[in-house]
Image (cartoon, rainbow, N blue to C red):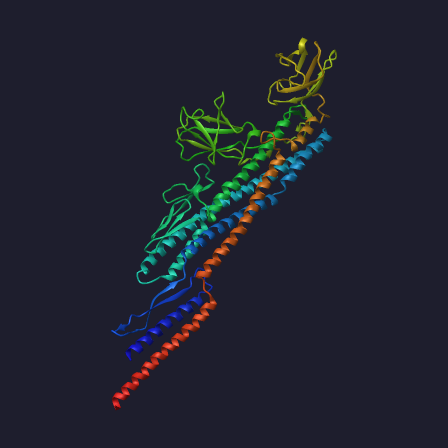
Length: 631
C-alpha cells in the first residue's frame, strides 16, 4: 500500500510543480526578456527482483528555461545594429532639418550675386550699392546661423557620447553583479529568473555599443567591446571613460579601463553611431560649409581688389573670415613650438583636417610630417622663407618643437561662423575696372589694345601705370610709373604682363608703336568689374578652379541628403532584420499561450489522477485494517 501511496504523492507533487510552472509562464507571457519554463521529470528508480521491477514514482529533476545561445546572441547583434541605425537616422534627419530651417543659403547666394548685376546696371546708384551690401550681410547671416547650428549639434553629440558611456558602465556593473548571483545560485539549481535578467541586460548593453560575449563554465558571462576591451569578466566590471580629445577639448573621446583611446575602434550600438556620425558626417559637413565660406570670401575679395570703387581707390575686401584653427596636442612638451596656418591657395583647399607632427631633425620635411586625421599621408613643401605648404595651406613655426609634438589643423571648420561683412561704405564696391589700355595716337601698326586684367592685386605698382614701346622684330620695353624698365618679345596671342596686370593685344604692332596702361578714369560709369563680380556665381574657385561657390554648397546639400537617405534605408533594413531575429528567438523561447492552455489541462488532469491514486491507496489501506480487525 505504501508504494502506491508514495507513487501517487510523487505524481501529485510533480503535477503541482508543473501547474505552478505553467501558471508562471502564463503570468509572464508579456514580460520582456522572459523565457518559457518547463519541468523536467524522471522516473524514480524502483526496486526489482529476479522476475520484474516495479516503478517507484516520478522525480522533478529541473525547471529549465527555453534557451538557444545562438538565437539569443543573434538577437543581441541585431539589436546593436538596430540601435546604431536608429541613432544615425535621427541625427541625419536633424541635420537635414537644419539645412532646411536655417534659411535658404542657395537663395541667399543667388540674391548676393544678383546684387552685383544690379550694381553693373547702375554703377553710380548708392541705393543699389547699399542693397548689394545688404544682400552680403544676409548671406553671412545664413552662413553664421547654419554654422552655429552645426556646432550646437556637435556639442550635443559629444554630450551624448559621454552619457552613453555612463550608461554602458551602469549596465556592465549590473551584469557583473548578476554573474555573482548566478554563480552562487547555480550550486543549488538553475537560476532562470537571474539568467533572463542578465540576458536582458546584455541585450540592452548591445544596443548601447557593439559587443561580443562568452559564457564560462561557472555560468558567468564575459563581455567585450568591438575594440576588444573587457567590459565584464566574472563579478568584475571594467568601466569605460569619456574625456576631451588631446587636440580639441570640445570633442569627446572614449577610453578603456587602462586609459587607452579606443574611440576610432568602436562600432555598433548607439555609441558607435554617435562617433561615426560625428567623424564621418557632421564634421565633414562643417568643413564643407566652411570651405564654401572661405571660397566666397576669397573669390569676392580677390575680384574686388581687381577694380576701383566710386572714390577711385582699389577695392577693399567685402568679407572677412577667420584663419585656420591650429590645436596643439595636450601631450606636447612644455614650451615647445607655436604653429600657425593660413590659406594660401583656395583652389587647392580641401575639407580635410590634418595632423602636423615633428619627427625630428633629418626626417620628413624640415623635420615635419603631415597627414589627414584619417591617416592619409600628405606631401609637404619647404618654402624659402622657412614656412611649409600643402593642400593650399601655409604653416609657420615659431619656437623649437620637440620630437613627437603634434598639432591638429582645422582649415575650414570655423569659417562659416566667422564669416562677416567688413565693407561698410556702399561706395566701396569696386564696380569699375582698375586699369585701361590705349594705343598711342601715332601708331602705324594694326595692333589694338584689349582689356587689362589684374593678375596680382597686391602688387604695389599695380596702379602706377606703364608705357609699352615696340621696337623691331616685336621686341618691346615696359616703363612703369616708378621708372622701372623691363623688356620682352611679343608673341601673337600671348598677353604682355607686368606689375600685377596683363594686357592682351590683337593685330600686329609696328616698330615705334606704343600703348599706355593707366588707372581707369571712368570709374563713375564703368561696370566692368561689377559684371566680373556677378559672374563669380558660375566661376570655378575650388578643386583647381572646377567648382564654384554655388556648386560647392549644392554638393554639400546632396552629400547630407544622401547620408539621410542611406540612414533611412538602413533603418528600414535593420528594423526588419531585428523583427525577424526577435520572432525567431521568441518562437523558441517565448510563451505560447495555446500550448500553455493545453499544458494547463494536461497537468490538471495529472494532478487529479494522482489525487485519485492517493485516495485509492487510502481506501485499500482502510479495507485492509478492517479485515484484520474483524477477520
